[in-house]
Length: 178
Image (cartoon, rainbow, N blue to C red; front, side, top):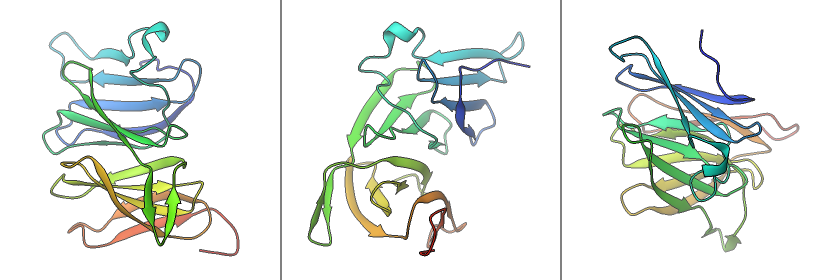
């Protein structure tokens, strides 16, 4: 058994099976990374290493977590920070942050709440649910920009992609619009 920080609201396993990762929405906000392949047994790491190291590294976090096919890069939804962040799993350093502000359907989406995320099979695109604007956000990871967003109904909460990546399925928890 390994203890993580308070309120682990997101969970993912890296594609290579090395990392078990939680997104912790408690105080302090953090990511817990369990390396199950460590030579002397599983090792636990935190991002940031200390609560004082959070500023500029992990200003917000919610439930969305995904790793690339190589198991080297972790993508994290920023929740109320309206961002998607990328971390190097080996060094546990933040690589970059993508601001999710964008225009779609003639409207500016300057604020939002990025929740659950998934990566396309080729790892070039991230799909995330915007829980405050009720939209699916599509992010180009190479260009580090939001390509577009699509209305998906009230309170989108979960997302899944078809195996070939041609379809996204969004689960809504809001009433009257599914």
